[in-house]
Length: 188
Length: 188
Image (cartoon, chains in turn orange, cyan):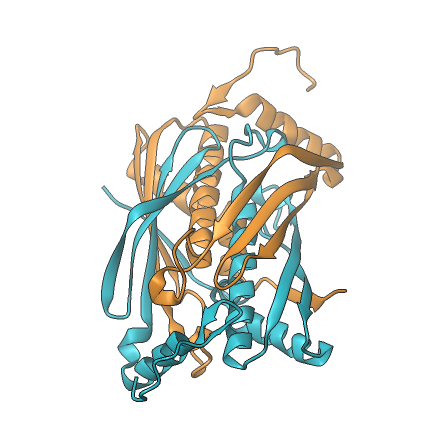
């Protein structure tokens, strides 16, 4: 912002110029860093739900998408559904996969580390005793394991540091790995 | 399973007969309750990721969908993306919305409580200081607030108990609200 540089630097497809401008702006005014994300959900009967995400707030503004993103969630037949959409615990994996990968790519870009490709697999165990409240088993994932296959000229040591940094900085990984309050209430 | 009843009982669109048969089967053989969910993710450059969910294991079997579910995640322009998909923290809200609602509907069905409609809004704050590692702020949601609007003949007291039970039993809500380990590793 305070340089005369006009050229935009892109690393890993990330606009590093805009990234550093954002960081500078946040350092000047911390309010810019405050974001609020929201979703509206409508139960469609049985195990089917439709969620819409449209507006969000951040950088002291509210943004409304011209075309909202809409998701259908269901359960597979073995869990009483018809599989017309992925199930909610798979959505959680999808969110985690995207978040930790983008965190990795952006932090690598900021450090000038070029990444050629990233593929990952995520998996986790769930015991239905919890969901069905048959005993005190945790209903959620016992843990989530992510394996990354990364093509890059960077050393394995650097890539190992990057995946740890990506996890530490990722909003979804952080939400999952610490006890994040979920507050429910009835409204009219 | 051990009755001669052939009529299927449906409440809230949930096959309660199958639900109670599943519970009976799990009480006979706890292994049936063990599920494993997984996802494959491919980075598509910049802030874009594509996640595919296909197979899963449960009830002592592995199931492979004939048509996998595929998700595109991106970031909005203010977060360096082009918004070709919802962002990962919005996917987390979508998963949470579906999970807690299906948990509510299924537990209500098991109790014989008829639900006519459920709409909900979810929202949570995120401070970018965490993602950008500018200080020790948690990168994730500070908390997630869910408001439910439910149409039912049940009393408000019953509905209040139901939303608390739904939260307690929901795999995604449980994964978020307790410290769930996220383990990352590099593979070749």
